[in-house]
Amino acid sequence: MYFLYLIFDAETCVYVGETSNIFWRIIKHKDKCSSESVIYLQEYQDKEEVLRLEKHYIRMLKPKFNSRYCQAGQLELFRF
Image (cartoon, rainbow, N blue to C red; front, top):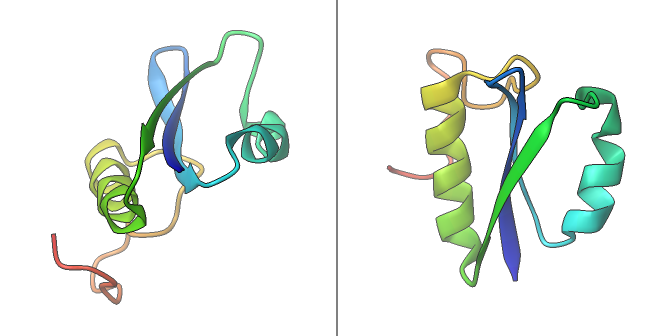
């Protein structure tokens, strides 16, 4: 199982990530969360699908704590 998760703070996405261990990742990201934060997650069977979705949401939402996939000319890992 793989998870795609989005962390929102004050209705703004601050981080998009993927993991196979959601509990450990959320603990690792507690510095990105406040008491008002909301975390949305979805479970997937296919890691490649999760990676494509992660890339898509990072590019679309431009979260302040993500740098991966946000810069022009960055090496592409997958075609989307």
